[in-house]
Length: 247
Image (cartoon, rainbow, N blue to C red; front, side, top):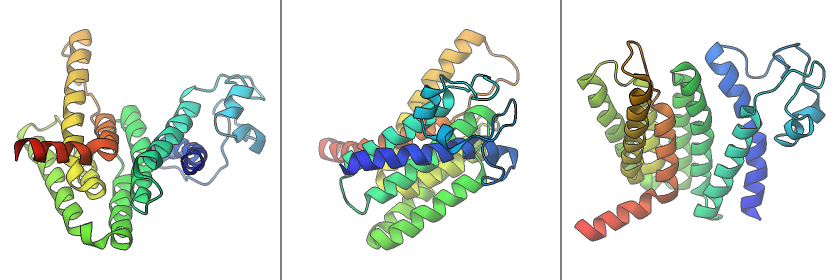
């Protein structure tokens, strides 16, 4: 029941994260004006703003002008709901689960903004860092030093990669890695490993298909976000297995 509640809450948050992903990189207010159709400008009615269900009821079109509404909106809502439910199922009704929920709510807009604009806003990584430290200080202050060290190590690792190959990785990726370390602690190691493998495989596939064109960039933020989810759900188990098997 707690997981179901988390999923429903995730739907509501997902609706807001759609606003964040669209407006934040454009420098627009997240609260004003009200959500409206990008084609005709008609404000969205409360009845038409129910996550996922309204999009399905309207068959993916604006009620007023019948212009198509991207399927991305209900997908982000459903994805956020699924992630919140998964975090609760994995962590149970424990205070530490709040840390995981906050983490995925940061990762979702980061991934989609980086896909669209090739940037990871400082406002999101800064908010993530503050939230991670604040929650740890309240929930598990004894773990705070480990998480601070993990954040420094993860950020330093990607910073070294960015300096070694300028242009290959942005500072937004470096900051996101540091935030991942703050949230995940030691589990950030398998999270970064998963992100690097996924990013490398997908990047190689894209370049093989499109060719090496000047100016071609592949955002790394979505793969860091995916690695972060993997680290959140299974990272500690992977670290424990590695320590037992090799040390």
